[in-house]
Image: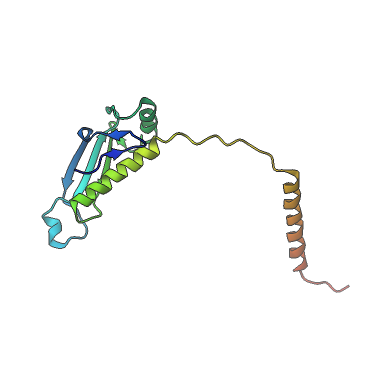
Length: 142
């Protein structure tokens, strides 16, 4: 079978919770594409799973809400002609999705004030640019 789906650190989705479906794929493959089930659909019931810690699960349910159907996350892969490679791609996609969805929120940005020198340099630059542009105007005879 494929490698276990590793979320982050030592957290792994058990193979028993993954449901694999195979179907005929469109795309490259010639006559072979009509006879082999190379498209892979990987389903994982996130809502009923006990693989994730409670905090991660809550975060994932919230962030993946638009992708879930009745709490089930579906990942499809059909890029390759080989079912095996499509299985690897689907598992990697699931792992990436879960890693991103369970990541802690970024630190809140602490508002800072620009230094006086920085403000002066910015305004001096604006004055300089204004002078250059005024110098491009038509010269009026006196």
